[in-house]
Image (cartoon, rainbow, N blue to C red; front, side):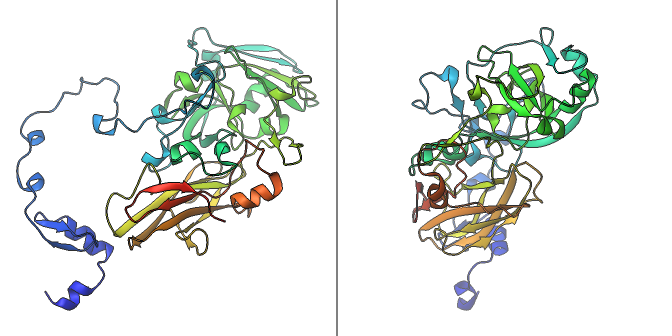
Length: 423
């Protein structure tokens, strides 16, 4: 082997093929070199010396114990009690776009309740020809649809308004999940009851103690709202509203009413209970933005990130993350390694779907120097994800909701990452 070959940068293909050899080690530079034989590949190991467990060992499949750190987490000081709080999706440890139900973020206002299918009822009343009450079995008799949508809490990233605070993508951006929902279009239910076309709003509420009532414009209700009873092919989890919830694509998660029990058709939003119609966005001058339901385009690098540091030295590195928009589909994501000075266009795992998470990758070679990682999403409306400073120029720092500013991770030379801000 010539010295000229050894001095050439290792290609990704050479790196990967070299690392597969039985007696080859990997140098810190990412190039392959001869090393001591690795007994994990050259010798028979315990797991190959006997039988594994039978098919009846675990009737409902669970993750292997080596992945027991991939779990939802809450922030203890976020609320006074976990009964009314949030569990964050471990987005830093996931890939692809579909969120496993057991990892999907949950938000409760009075705790997750147990409501059986036999005891379930859904009332449709108000400005309708025929007030109706449906059982669970009734809903399953209607033609159903399948759609994959993200559900994002309006407060996702909300603790970051005044500056970098939480050190992990799970905590800064983990109030989100993306699942395939199965259910009946709400317009089908409304048509069954003969809704009055003079009705411009619906008021929806859940069966839990909080009821969490929300007003939704009829235009949205007739468009793409789903009365859902399955997620990722199986029954909803208790914490996600079993047996039936509302799915309001692209709009803030507080409107996705769980344990859905009543839909009332009205000619105006519920008066005297304005807080049940929406969350508000307080501006610097004390006024609040009204009816900001749609979630604007947003993205985040999930790896490398504080909870997913670079596990190796310099060499081939896959930078990956998620992007989404409540107004349409993601068309492009750019990634910066220098805090926004220069940008590279990432590779989308597949074309962006309407109101669903999109996975992006930037396959690069890391030289071992510090990076300031950022991602910037664009959707099919032409919207470009703003910086936090751009948002603050308009909205100040008093807000809690709808923070879709660009996130920055400072990746150190040792591969560890930290939540920071750049200006």
